[in-house]
Length: 81
Image (tube, rainbow, N blue to C red; front, side, top):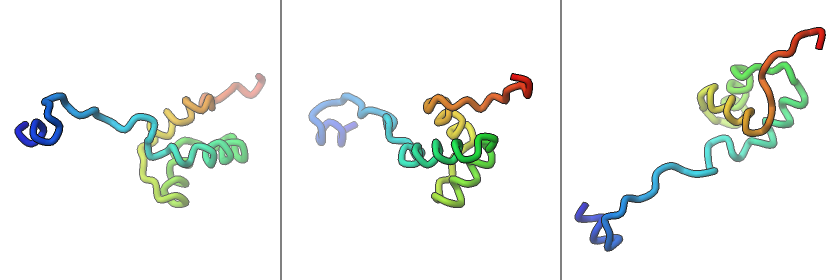
């Protein structure tokens, strides 16, 4: 607290997080292209490809949230629809 007061002249806490700059921000276009090329790709397969091709080690839920933000549904559709 002493260092914070000395450096900023305030005891106001620094902001937390990294808004809009996650690990997957730089590969959004690649993910969209990959899903367009192979629509039946699973989240686990996509996560593995991100690790092998881009060196990104992220949890499958992060990939799922990215797909949701991009408007890409992972829900399977019935074969008759």
